[in-house]
Length: 273
Image 1 (cartoon, rainbow, N blue to C red):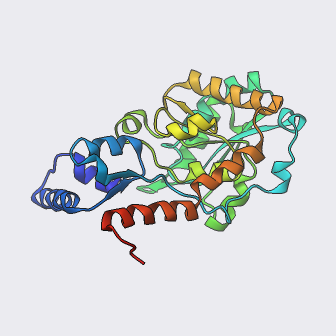
Image 2 (image 1 turned 135 degrees about the horizontal axis):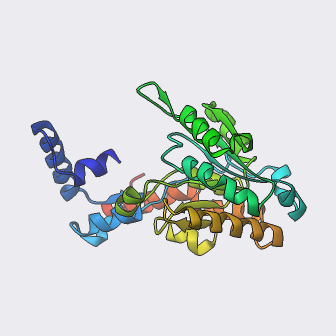
Image 3 (image 1 turned 60 degrees about the vertical axis):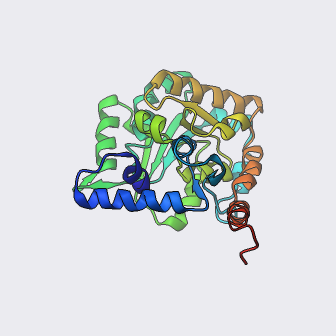
């Protein structure tokens, strides 16, 4: 995102102008340029030769983030007794936690045992995202149905991934439309058996595989419809945690390393190791 800002936005100082100039010179001289975001790929292709631009999506370590047996063995009756949707990661207010809280009451009318899990926090000028989210949940009358953990060590994140049935990885609408969305959490959700709700048109491959469900990040009605649809798919057996997790191998760190190597090999026109 820092590179995107340097590349796209008009510089406001001599230093910023110099950084932008150096970046653009570097990009023009580069043999290959890769990006994790579909929208930014199009921006780059509008200025540079198509053949030097590559889309390389983020990866997941499938040895760390993997589906555990208890989640894999869930049955439709398990989902009917509790369906958990959650956000796990930093800056939760920007990445979907506000949507989770704002739609909770409406979703509990449709899914009586629906709950929300929010793992992680972010602090800016000593203001906690979780503190603000708790206030919002209290105002909406849904605090009893949300579990907040605050910051957790990274090595505990995979275990929390087992607790949710569907993940959320949104991003403010205007930024998502302009830049796209490349959250690594998306692939961590998938590797642990959870389909994920994502910004529209940012991950067309995941939408085609029906493990990613695109919505406008500000559209509460679309979010409610999508959660209800995913819930019904689990109930009907149309979606299985194991089936979702199997597709994560397409996004493994090993697979991505091979893709990156093939790009460099093509750029250098020879083996580089």
